[in-house]
Image 1 (spheres, one colour):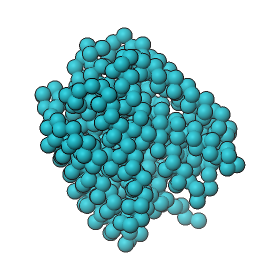
Image 2 (spheres, rainbow, N blue to C red; image 1 turned 30 degrees about the vertical axis):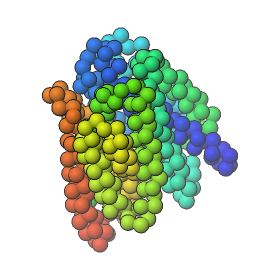
Image 3 (tube, rainbow, N blue to C red; image 1 turned 180 degrees about the vertical axis):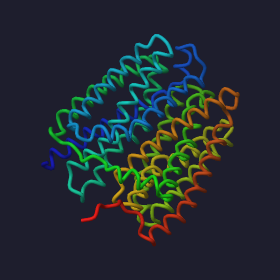
Length: 397
């Protein structure tokens, strides 16, 4: 690829991730409007994130296994076309059950696009440019938290939740066109070997790191899913939107800072720092008692670790077992969404029990548990690094 073509390709994939992230996170920004418009309670509306998270958790590795030989341009553009159709169906949904069905199909698209966009970069670019390029396109998810989800929530406040879904549908069509026009045709990737999956499944260090990812997502989404209704007392929709955008901005800053932190401390220690940072931020949010200055401070501290922890976990897995990166990163994507599903479901249970104010405390407790397992994993990492067992089994010559 020429440098100009490469930039266009990366921009298209970044925009596709922005659209994907906005669509997945959108319900969190407008739970109140969804609940009111569909005649369900807040906890039931929050299960929209539970359902989509569960589908992506299962679908990401399945998609990686089944679509490796499909042309990348067709696969990615097709997933954006499906995303557009599902958002149109969401905007027109006559009842909650139809919306859930649309969100389940929408999650299939998300399970394809984000991990396979990264795999496409691996097929298109030389090794020395892959890491930075993958980091770049994942900024799309950060931007979805900064702008897409808060602005979608504001649109829902002003124009209604159907309008918010319709706007994401239009954006999906634009992403589909951008991908089709910039990704070269006839590009496929090598399938993951069964030996890679088995090697990951048998290794305690990798499994513990993946468990940390699940607990991180669970702790965050226990509260994040219900962030908007928890801020209802803040007043005007614009204030809620500003708080969500403030949180997203610090999440983006933390993601950028994570690249320097890894160099200074190493991935394992960097993850621990971010998990403890988020624990402090969420605990402070729980203690804020509606104080706007304290909420903004808590959002800052929590936000710093939000994307950083996941980014560092990817680097941690790659450093632990370079030959198993394709399998471990695919499973880490599943772990992120499994955590989203578990957190959204746990939050729904607590909201149904009238425990909404306690969600930050519960989330902080789970994040602290994740920090403990991260420390536990380090012992196995050191042992395996010494013995050199973290490699993919290779057939004899």
